[in-house]
Image 1 (tube, one colour):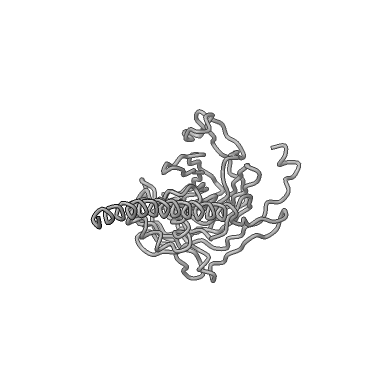
Image 2: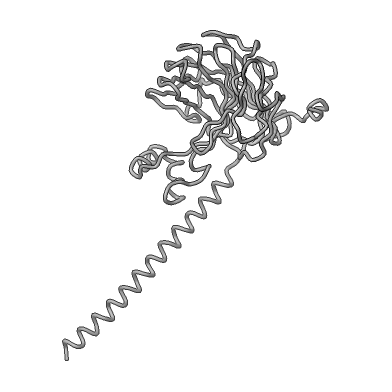
Length: 306
């Protein structure tokens, strides 16, 4: 009789344990879903730097507030040197950048740049609408892990190495070269596309140690670019998804325009970028100074007509 009771008791215990395990598992799933939802809401509410037309939003002379910038050492480095932001790129066909932690939608950004070392066939300028993996989409197994990555970058890097997941990054970049060319690039989904191909410009001061002032104006989905206060015309392809081609002084399969429109771009970070090209090779060192970001001024009658 005791054996029968023991067996019955064991069955009841097994049933209870099974139900408890199911409830516990469901509770954990609900808790994970709730934390993911909370993080997603908080992420979507990330404050943007914005203001009235013409307001100064941000200024950096790179003498202080290093904790506001993404700085790192290695073959590709970003660091403060002699009160400037220095980007170094050792490998060909490689880009490195440094952005402040603030996010922008509309902006009028200007920065000074000087190529200090490496080939003159280089690329450097402003990177903007930069969205890291957590802002593009959470590509880690749980959104809460993306929150950990954002709060503690070293922990995020360790998680990605453990899970063998490389971060996705999206951005736009307006770059010039020390041999006198400029271009606009879009990176998304691991693919780089020339929004406007390399075009020569007499406005660029050529050679190493030549200072150039680079400006990007983003307002209501409209983007304009300037080099040393001179507007930079763009070679935009007829197919918006195609890469731009400029050769022999002509914009092929497209037309030259003063600006381009893209209303799909989400707000993101802003900063400096440097790149070593395939033809020029590595060893690129560029220093940046005096980043100033304004809220775009109200468009003039001339702007509206354009």
